[in-house]
Length: 131
Image (tube, rainbow, N blue to C red):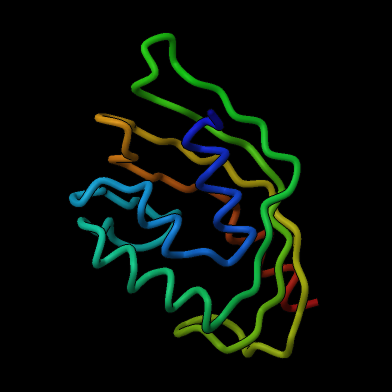
């Protein structure tokens, strides 16, 4: 059986957001790199819809590690994307492309992801879309 974090990113790359949501616990905690944390699968669904409207992204070269007890995971990957629609408070979107290193951290319980915490360098992203 494929591990849950590989499944999560496989669904992400396929644009299968329903599949991603199926891997999440109902009360999942999402901690974005910028902004306030959000709690619950419905809030995560709203986040995915917003991201889909503004960005087209793909996870590349993922490296995934699990804690010995399987309750925690970490992933590092390159995120390649296109900026499709202007996001609030960010530069105007003109289809700019970007590539960022991302770190992600997960908690896992009962066969579901209970926390997703993403971290990337916003200034690096801004430099790329403003170039």
